[in-house]
Length: 72
Image (tube, rainbow, N blue to C red; front, top):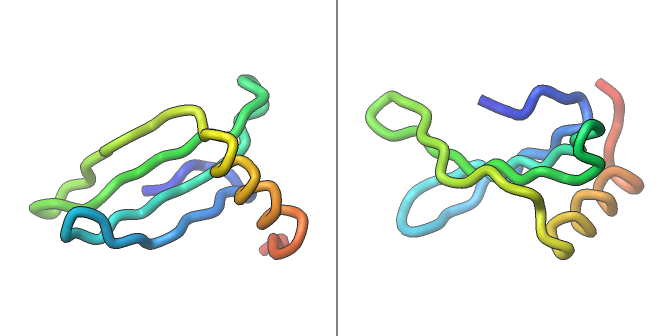
């Protein structure tokens, strides 16, 4: 599972003893960066959080977009 955008940044993180995927993407219709946190449990995807990114997350996303993003 991932946000449907070529401008999506997904990062693997270890939180509360489990692997989680944190995805960031810009939502044009909202004019903001969204953050999705999810994990796989018992062979099912579990969404932990889906929200507007805070300023630190948005800055991280825009820095990645400006410096590291490459069209695939």
